[in-house]
Image (cartoon, rainbow, N blue to C red):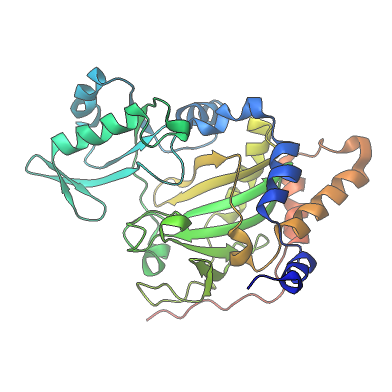
Length: 331
């Protein structure tokens, strides 16, 4: 049972609780007027493109029931694609189509979907079934990311992504989210995906968390999840740091994917990133955030004037993990 001794131990480790996250970071650093920039994926995507940040290609938008008939035209030259709600949360409403067969669509999990089922799904998106607050929404049809071969042994049925939490432009924590059979190929922890801590200095994976439990191996493949070096890590950190300049949000989660052909792509941004990352990195977010706040306080009037590169360099120095796991052996 959670007692005062446990609470004190967590405080000593610098673990951040949800009330502290909301009061001291989300409310403190994020102007609510800026939330629409990240809550609406279509708006986020257009903003990123204007800033020269790579994102998955957008094939089309459907925002009315009458517009559902345009789907076939939108995807006629694309054998695979992704349909997602523009204002969805937690991965709900996302449908990944990997192939077609005899007039049917094949999902990433292998299920055959009829055109009528697909239209019904889009209708649900438009009606607000998956949107924040249940408001009417738009369906976004976009490029299906191809995962790098590196992740094949530690991922099942979907594309892993990287979540980097950024405070005032400084990356403070990172984890790799790995799909499982239970998560139906989605990289969302609350649906059963694995969160694996990442050393900010090197991009090497640490231990993992699954349903808030510490794990060392993927539950489906049994392969170790630690010791994997994420490709293009320098680009990932630079991209995450730039997202602060892009949005003006001081505390946010940046979600990236590693595409086999296009490299790192920004998937979406989150103004209220979760706290499970602390289990994955085996360190407290509060401790790390306060180091950045102390740095900004020491800079005085110069606070907030650093470019992305020196911000990233400081984070790498402050949050380097001393004893990294060895790379898993290959068969």
